[in-house]
Image 1 (cartoon, rainbow, N blue to C red):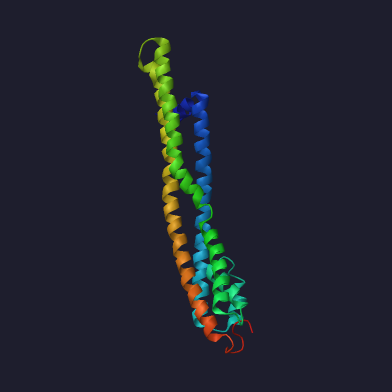
Image 2: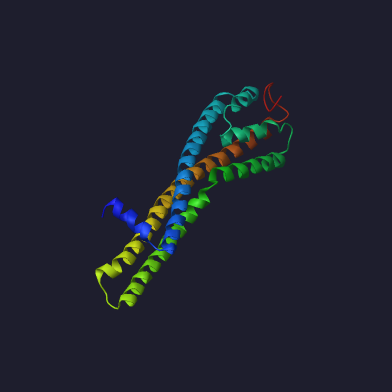
Amino acid sequence: MGSDTVLTLILKAGLVVKFVLLVLLFFSIVSWAIVFYKQRLLSRVEKESAQFHNAFLKNKQWDALYQSTKRLMLSPLANLFRAAYSLEGASREEIRSALKRVESTEAARLERHLTFLATTGSTAPFIGLFGTVWGIMNAFMGIGRIGAASLAVVAPGIAEALIATAAGLAAAIPAVVAYNYYLSRARRSIILMEDFSQELIEYCVRNNGQTETGSLGD
């Protein structure tokens, strides 16, 4: 069946099936936009975090590190460091509380929009199934009107039903794959952030009040 034939069947489909296809098209377009956005965002986050962590391990002069973080605005590690930089003289609990707030904000940013992918993956097949049921129902109604079953009578309804099924799967499968992939990458960054937060807490507590010039915001 050529693409022109599929387009013709879509144009001849009933209003309900057309609406179902439009809804699935919306889910698919938004899902792919999120896929490209998350790929770009997480790649930059991972690159900037690696750059900052390498700089942190090599340079304990916090003034210089703080200046370097101004070029790394997407890195959760750099954002944690900026929060810790202003906590000179703070207690362990104050430092932990401040960094926990940053962790929560950064985790939400990393996982933002992934819920839509999960929603698409779980609901799109059922939306397509609704179109399928409606198309089959139209096919049986056509048999009832004509009073006889023939390929010419049932083919349009069955065809639009299968198109709805295919559209539902086409929207759901990439969304599920992308959701699992990007959630895994986001969780890796979150775990790295949590580990670095603990490292910062210990470093701040150990050095508060007894740091060299240039450390902890001096």
